[in-house]
Image (cartoon, rainbow, N blue to C red; front, side, top):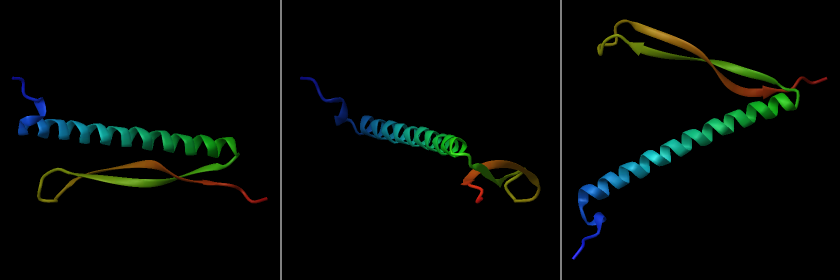
Length: 83
């Protein structure tokens, strides 16, 4: 008699982790498309893209002393010039 693959607790854990990982990937892809759509719509409507500077810090060691920081621009909103 054959047993279902999901009867094993290890198989259920693996399946759950795969589903969670797939869901996270879908959210990242959706977020990327959403940002690109907002930027495209702003450009098409004659708006000005406004970016904000975001800083990410990386520590050299686990004690919090020293490290490097990286600045990068992130799209914030679309500005329309009032005439």
